[in-house]
Image (cartoon, rainbow, N blue to C red; front, side, top):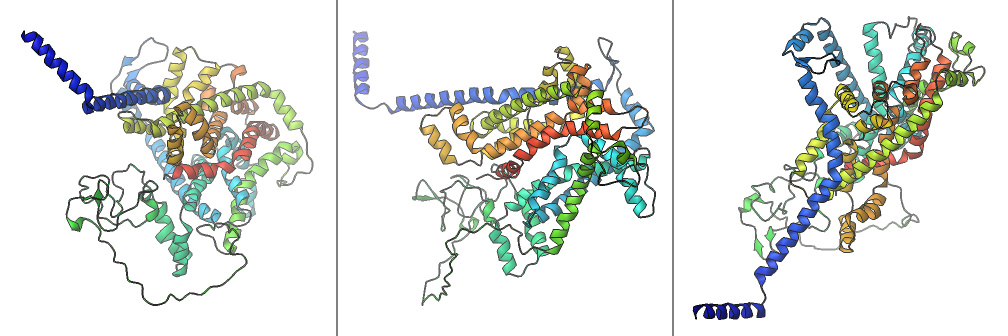
Amino acid sequence: MSSGVSDLESGSALSVSARRPDDTGQKASGQQAAARRRRRGYLLFAAFAMPNLVLIAVFAYWPIIQNIYLSFTTWDFISPAAEWAGFLNYQALFSSWSFPDVLLRTLVWVVVVVVVTLVLGLALAMLFAQRIRGTTSVQTLAFAPHVLSGAAIATIWLFIFDPNHGLSRMVFEAFGATSPAWTNDDSWALWALIIVSIWKGLGFVAIVYLVGIQQIPSEVLEAARIDGAGRWTQFRRMIFPLLSPHHVLPGHHPDDLGLPGVRRDRHDDQRRARPLHDHAELVHLRRGVQPHQRRCLQRGLHDHVRGADGDHRPAVPIRRAEGSLLMTVMPTAAATEPTRPKSPTSRRTPWWGVLGLVVTALIFLLPIYLFVTTAFKTNEDINTWPMRLIPQSLTLENFVTAWELAPFGQFLVNSVVVAAVGTVLKVVLAVFTAYAFAFLPFPGKRWLFVFMLGALMVPGHVTLLVNYITVGQLNLLNTYAGLILPGVASAFGTFLLHQFFRSLPYEVLEAAQIDGSGHLRTIWSFILPMSRPAIITVGLIALIDEWNNFVWPLIVTNSVNMRTLPIGLLYLKENDGINDWGALMAGTLFVVLPVTIVFLLAQRYIVAGLAGSALRR
């Protein structure tokens, strides 16, 4: 009887619950759907980002761990296992007479190159920002050394520093001095290395600074000019501070200043909104969010945020309009014509700007001019002194000689395969990883992003030994896979694209999601077309790295048939110290010409790609 009553009660309860909305059930189903979407996002993040992160772990971080372990062992690379040696290796290193000298030279090289490159790069960027006629051509010349391989640059500057036939001898003799032995004297060799390093990296630093200068609102500097600020005052008080990393904070930075009247959320902000924001262009607000002028509200326009009034900026009273507004109207025919946006530092063309462009063009053009003309000179022209800057006659004999001394045809095929496959894989991994970090949820995503960025701090030469061992254990020595695989992981490209993706219009991506576009379709139909400058920039940088790689192909291949173009220059060097400069320069032209052509075709996207990656709405 009791069981029948309980069944009846349960049945009546079920009938009652069936007749009214079950809010608890709907809430539970909603939570389950959200959990499923979250799990799906986790799986997609793993599928998109983990291949790149695993490659970074294997070929960037694992070598560091192995190097630390091997530094405490003795191993001759032949024995099956390493023997523990403790601190004996470190004792031998620190007791070596050459270690302090090497450390001091390294510190001098790093400090001088970094300081001079940054200072001159900023000066060049300010010069390029003047928009003087011919600036674009000089920018291309300044960036060109960054495209050339290290082997090609070394060959060019060895010819310039040659004490018998080089430009260095001509310059020193013009001042009544003798050219130093740049490559034979240790003290002069250090300064030769510093000069070459600055020449190679200066253009890239200048372009990066130029991107930052172009993002400074022209209205800010125009107002400073109206107030009577000179060029130096504008640079010292406005341009330089705005280029400082202190003023370029990422959107998720915990210490970015709050706009008065806008809270991070509805909870207590612990006086975070009290500091005034001096630069309105650095406020990270999504489009459509408007600050309230009088008080902070929550849940629409009903309840205010609790807290002391002193924690918030008071509203500015609006003055009552009285009287007539006096205006002066000046009609002009060009009022409706579009005007070209002015550079933040543009004015009438200064004489020093033209002189600076001429000097910059000579610094970057003269070594390239000597290299190209020497490739077409006869041996008589090359060995004649004084140096003939304009060749008396042109010949292709040097190209024939270089082609016969080394199999440049096979080297070219290998370079094309390695550069093409490596670039495509780098760009694909960078696109998917950047998309995952920008738009997909994952627990600990920020720490994984830091993990990826940490790979940028790992010097490539530190990983050579362990990566060689790893590739050997995978039986990939002397193969295309062994040449390509360790360099496929992309940290810099991922960071660049991640920043660019976060600057894309959120409304477009939201509309694609509402229309039912999946992640792959969103990437293909929306992300890639809108990110063309950044993707081309990443692809160009990856192509330059793969094409110009010298050390890794040299140690991972032992067959001539697997060598790449930069290594081909070694086959043109004479062991007796007497170089055939004509054949060397012709072989160098073989190395640099293909990638230079690609750079000239795509260089207009570099500034746009870097600029888009530097900003975030």
